[in-house]
Image (cartoon, rainbow, N blue to C red; front, side, top):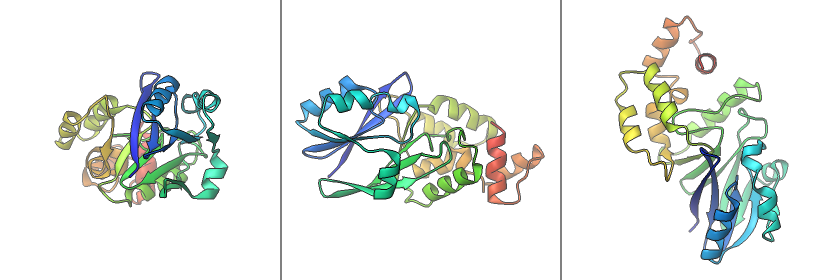
Length: 233
């Protein structure tokens, strides 16, 4: 059975190791020493190094990990074409999720989803690609996954995201529960929790629709509501 190990670097960046009994894959592995120490302690072989997208704060550890191992770099085009990575006879599915950047992807196995800067716990990434429609579709695809899916993000923005969520929905009692469950040493949420507190996944909720109407923003379609929420940032 594959497992996920989370590593923090640059204050709020989060990188990951997906590993089994003998082999591992590093995703956005910025904490090189810590990752290599964990691999050595478990007597693992690092097979691949890859990324959720190409921003420097996510790729910063690539060269060092490759230099200190026999791992191979899997670039965006290759992993998208592959559609999945096999590790110890288990499939890690690659979702192409453009929006934050054109090269954004997510990694999915069992109930774990490594989302990079596409979806954070309580918010979403900035739309640096400039294509809000693509971003909307990527978020919609994630929303269609099982509600017990565990969201492992590319950054820990929980405190700030919940402050903003409370400003939009001050009567949402699930926000306090979300904060009470927050652990900075292991940052994650379930998709079900996101649907309760993340305003960018709540564009069909009456409270969000009423808010958009109050601000005179387009609200009649899902895409309009999504675009309006993104414009409010």
